[in-house]
Image (cartoon, rainbow, N blue to C red; front, side, top):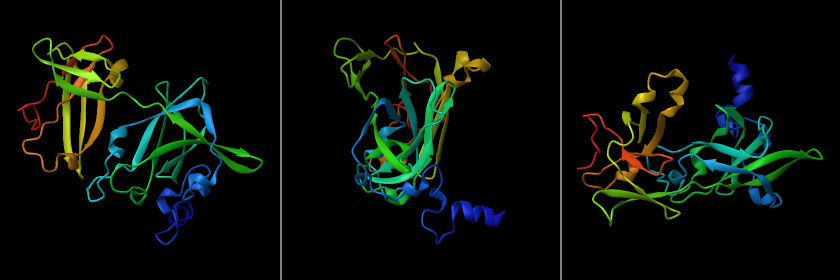
Length: 251
């Protein structure tokens, strides 16, 4: 068993080691500039928690080494798609696309040494074979919206303003979502929760949420707040209900 694992992952003295796995693993460590600049026009990717890579702290206890996201394509199947993930111009992982609950997803582990202090550039490439050689096509980033919480100018209370200019009113208790977990460990906080009306419906278990927050973003802040809001397709938002023990609610 040990010999098999060493052959697959390598040892501490073998380059790549645990991260040198996946399709076309010979690409790991190569610079993306070594390949022609070709764009894959039928695909888009979305990066989970993209803002984590905008301000990496190399001294933090937590590094977002597990990079994941989704693919959007006109095709009905992405099961055969091989992907390469680059960090700051170097291919740091290779992986496959897979379908989960009808959504095309992907994930990969990259070494912490792939990151640099500050903003990091994460890109996704489609990998194929052309005349026996690997060919890379860059996939465009379908960046999600960003949101800003602000005091309302026209009414009491608060609003959320999206990056496209949409103003979403925050209406207390309009959406019944509750925070269930805020688990702090290894330099980050894991948040998760559920919709109360969906909690006991087994067909709607995916209506919950889960995300990580690097605790380093709170450094130097007195009495920090971490407030979580749910946004509906109907154009309204509500702040989640927090447990009594929650320490980062609005002061």
